[in-house]
Length: 163
Ligand SMILES: [Zn+2]
Image 1 (cartoon, helix red, strand yellow):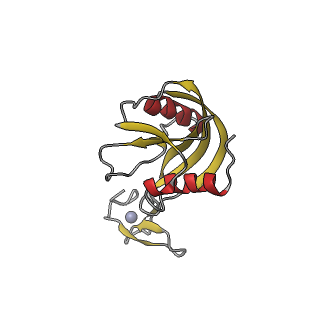
Image 2 (cartoon, rainbow, N blue to C red):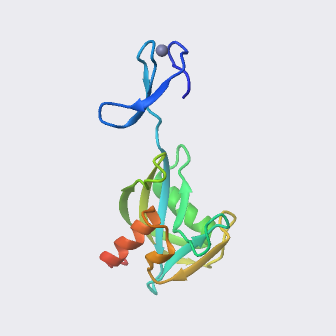
């Protein structure tokens, strides 16, 4: 949102009284908060206690992530999560638990709804959205520090609840 929805004046961006960014019209004081985009991240594990890692060619060398995807309008996050697992990795999965919501400080425009899912079948293969998929033990060193993938794998290491 660039212009005031009420009078058309160019909006100014600044923190509100609680420090959150918002846009305000200098003429009529109309305010606007940019909503975050909801995305889902899914920590997928196998019965052999391996984590499913994904890699896109845009990633820095050696960097991986867990399964991720934008939640389209009208689709429950759980449905998106399992659909993305299937599309990105070829695996069927079921949700084990809701892991919480997370904001990666480098992506304040996104709110992550995170799940742990267990693989129940299918064949591991990289789908259209990813370039490589691979299984490995939980290892945060292959994930970007502070990212939601990092946070999820760290949770698994702190509390090894596989199922
Ligand atoms: Zn205005």
